[in-house]
Amino acid sequence: MRLSIIRGGTSRAVFLHLRDLPALPADRDELCLRLIGSPDPLAIDGLGGGVSSNSKVMFVGLPPEHPDCPPTVDLVSVFAQVSPTEPHVDWSGNCGNISAAISTFAVHHGLISPRETVRVWNANTDSIFELSHSGERIDVRFLAPGTLGPRVILPDSGLEASLVDIANPIAMLRAADVGIDTCATPAALNADEELLDRLEEIRQEAAGLMGLDGPVLPRLALLGEGDPLPVLMTSVGRVHHALPATGILGIGGALALGGTIADRPPSTETVLRHPKGTVTVSASVVDGELEWVALARSARLIMDGEGF
Image 1 (tube, rainbow, N blue to C red):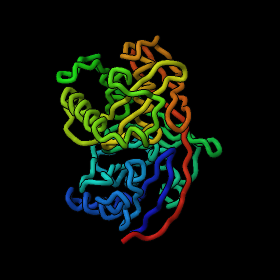
Image 2 (image 1 turned 30 degrees about the horizontal axis):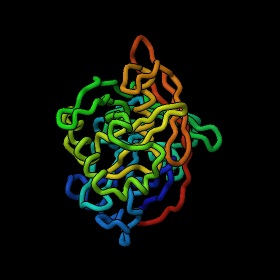
Image 3 (image 1 turned 180 degrees about the horizontal axis):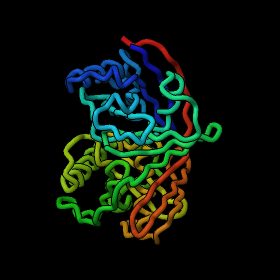
Image 4 (image 1 turned 45 degrees about the vertical axis):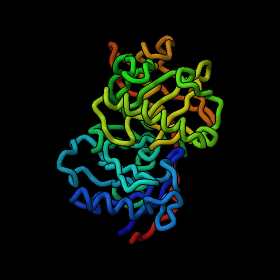
């Protein structure tokens, strides 16, 4: 089948046509595991890279190809997050970084003509977002992206968290409460298996309160103090090398609404500091509701060919 490898933001994915998505769930999982070369931390027999940010598959098609797709969009997407180390594929969420590259794939494969703004419906999350192009910059804007949940005390650890369902589910915690220095490198944190096990236990606590049971969502967002706001995030059992885009959107949307464990006044523009640099996330709030949340990304087509 024809496929492309495309970088979107700080992630990379294998892109395929929606028509090549198998009908049976088991066959879908098998296809994605085979393409990525999982489970294998080295991904020797596939196109992955051994970490969550490059163990991704995105299917893209036109609205008539999916029975539930609304008629007001240009494209439909179905996203698969593949575990690098376990034979597991998660279909419950979306990837904001890889979403930024959807129009790159669609134009290259002749699904749509080049245009300034592309509207996409993501089937995993039943959400609509816009991709606005200006040179190499791609603004990813999620419309009506979700809600800020309550501040809670996690039942086992006793930690305070803000539960957020914006773009993708996340649980925001103070990094200091978990005993983590936000200046620590992901490599150092990921070398501490005891810490990773504790973070996973905390994530599972939050998942139970949010009605989730998969190994990916919610992600943990560990917040420091200062401006730009320091943030570390987990992804598939490890500390992310930068920040997942949907995590950026979730944090930005939550901070725009206010009332989170960050204890900051509401702001419609926030600069986050992460291990690879900084990123600005913007949002619009109307009558106490989140209208949209957005960030700027870029994308590059790396290769196009046939997969087996």
